[in-house]
Image (tube, rainbow, N blue to C red; front, side, top):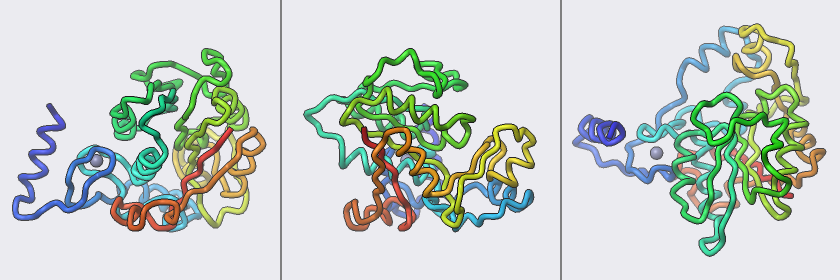
Length: 257
Ligand SMILES: [Zn+2]
């Protein structure tokens, strides 16, 4: 009901205009995507984080959130990949780690996907699970996993990647994404840093304990056993990125077992 009210208010606020964009996540018509919250820019500037947001690999600062479902540009990118990869006559077991609301709602609409969410702290998930010790799941359980913007929070990310590899079926795939700043040349990490201003300065957010380089991230995934593939604008339909508010330089990391 609340979302219906939100939709109505949104339409009433701009009655003279015609919404021309369809959000690929919620399928609603919208006027435009909303920019990234200024708070993030203010905090990184305040604490002296050395990378510019323009240096972030998959981030559309000016067209970030859907005003109705709240989904981000990266969520829309994943939705595009689901739409092109999910075969209607197959069934899939999917594990969503620390689910993003709009993407979870999008995935759950796919009737041939058995959806399961997991997190150590989020109260509403199906399973309360430590990513570095997912013993509640047997080996080779899932056809797909989503692990987006999680590993930069996890002290032992190598162990987490090994666990993701273990629970994925051979032939399965996963979305493995972390914040990447293109000019970063090596992984910087320190789980012992607990001071929030220090975390902002070094890792770009108050709850991050690591900043990945592109090469470093891929190497760690490969060390865990994964084959890593990069999907860019050329792997999708022409204009798919621009129509969905996805920055043309965005890269989707898909890992295979
Ligand atoms: Zn939406």
